[in-house]
Image 1 (spheres, rainbow, N blue to C red):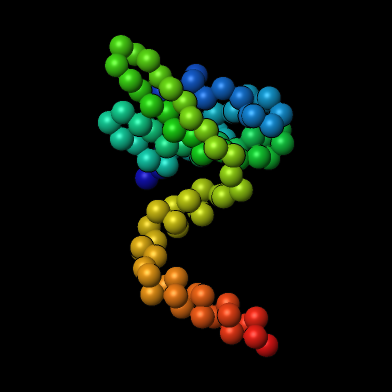
Image 2: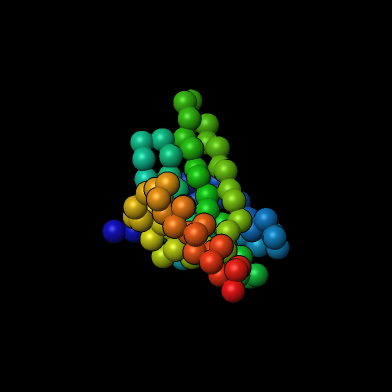
Length: 103
């Protein structure tokens, strides 16, 4: 079950596009590990979204890495649970695209 709040919230900062601070209910924990927490944050001001990795290091140091995205929380979950893309999948996609170009 996903959690709405996180102890790392003070380290998340502000939206990189508009500078507005992330609100509590706009941040959702997607995965939590021993030293890393992956979050999805949506800016309530400009509606942009970011995937954030909050990394807790030794001696209490915390590093936050972020990446703007157009993916929703459900998109991220779907990609994480999807199977691997095989070489056959890539070849089949190539054949399909080539056949469409020939028409």
